[in-house]
Image (cartoon, rainbow, N blue to C red; front, side, top):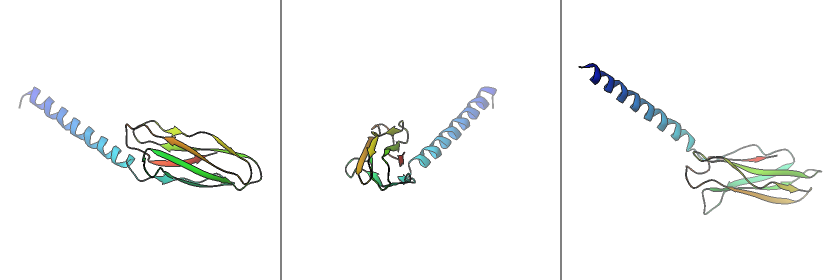
Length: 115
């Protein structure tokens, strides 16, 4: 085997190892939507839009005694993460924040409510 053949074999092996590692990482990012803890004083439901897997929401009610601001945060896989509009609720009020992941990518991987 010549030195050129050895170099090509080493490079092919490195390329296969790199591709395998990249596939392993992408497989871990394409997980089910994981809800996270809701900030104190708010009761929230989060989820994906029933027709569009790239749109997520947080529907919250302020159970506290002071005004609270929240927004939905989406982890979008290969696309940049996005935040929804900031919503301020007085005690007893309900409201919704929505956001949309870019169509290029794996969709929503996680939805959280930010205070």
